Every structure is written in C-alpha cells, then in structure tokens.
Amino acid sequence: MEGKLMKSESQPESTILLTKIKEFTRGLLVNLSNGNSPIILIDRFRNHCTLPDSNCFCSSNLPFGKEVLTLCKETHVHRLDVMLRVLLIVQKLLQENKHSSKRDIYYMHPSVFLDQSVVDRAINDICVLMQCSRHNLNVVSAGNGLVMGWIRFVEGKKIFDCISSPNTAHPIPVYVEEIKDIVSVAQYILVVEKESVFQRLANDQFCNANHCIVISGRGYPDIPTRRFLRLLVENLHIPAYCVVDSDPYGFDILTTYKFGSMSV
Image (cartoon, rainbow, N blue to C red; front, side, top):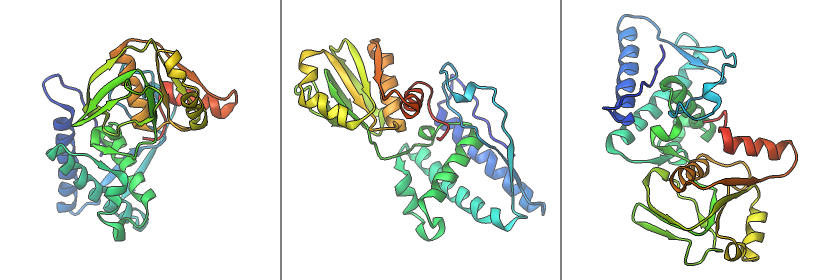
C-alpha cells in the first residue's frame, strides 16, 4: 500500500493530499473488514519534494529498499497507531488550512507518542507514503534562522522591516508560504554558516556598507530557512553566496542549502 502525490494544475496540493489520505485510510479499512492485516510499504532512505525542477535527493537514482509494516508484528502496531493519529491531525490541519509544529503535535497525545522522536518518525513515514514534503502537511518546526539587511516583507499580519535597521537580526518566519509584499534594494544575498559570524557582521555594521541580505541557519539550516532563501532568490533574482568552514561539515552545510536534506 503506497501513496503518490500527483500534480494537477486544477487542484491545489492540499486537496490532492486529502484525497490520498482518504484513499490510504479506505485501503486500511477494506483490508481489516476482510479479515486481512494491511501491508504498508515505506521506501527507506528516501524523501520527497513537490518541486520536480529542483536538483534534490528526490531526483536521484540511488538504490533504496522497502520497509514492510504489518499488524502481524507487535513492534509495528504502536508505530502504525502513532502514524494514524498523526495522519488524523494532518488531515484536520489541511481541512482548516492551519499549521502546527511537531512539538505541538507531540503534546496532543504525549502518553501515546511517548517521545518527540516517535512523532518525527511518523511524520517522515507519512511524507514518504504520500510523496510530499513536510510543509505540504502544514507541519512546521520551530525556526532557527536569522535575517538582516536591505529587505522588508509581510508574514500574515506582521511586518518585518529590516531596511529601517539593516544590521538588526530578525527571526526567519516559520510560515514561509504566508510571506508577501517583499521589497528589497539588495544586490546579493550572503548566507553564513555560523551565528557568531552573523553577529560579527551585525556588530561591524556590514549591511550599512554593503547593500545585501545576510542569512544564517545557525549551523545546519532548517526547512524554513532553506525555503526562505529559495523564496528570496526566486523573487528578487539576485545572486546568493555562502560562507562556510573549509571542512567536511562546512561542505555538508553548503550542500544542504543547495540540495536539501535526506531528513524531511
């Protein structure tokens, strides 16, 4: 039993996902009503995005196996229980066009989920089954990224006016899809690996002397930071440069910005 998110120009992705969730749960019920144990196949070491033109891990041809989940194995029962509970929450988020953090989802059923990592794994399983990214599920993580420089934008009802004080750090919004009215006179975007470097640039009034936007994911960038960077590149049509340590960790962070992560 596998899900596949098919694109449609006439239907929003949320509608397609809700259809896939309905088909998935209907398949489970049919098997159970017939006295059969549902068999759920999950692609291992694979995640999915909804942007086929992006050069990411999803488009690779790396070999991967399938993990078989079934109610016949006691160790799988709790995992499937958690997955279905999270799937119910996701369905409600999509229906109401709301967002929730992974931590908020955990606190909805802490006695069942037992640990945050259990919820994280269920969300990853759902993304693989539905072949979508976590943001398509309206599930977000707490933002870690910072931005400063010559840019102003609106997120929901909140205005981020970095231009009035270009060397002041602002948190990158978690709900990137709600960002609008982007205004900028920046000539380029500078991404720095470390928060300490970001703070040094702020202290040195770097953006006063350079018409740019400075972004930091404070180490490995989270999804909101990567999506925010992509949004700026696509809307402002200016180059982006990245400063990282010249070591394996630095290059790993650089490739995470460029290609994404194997985690959802």
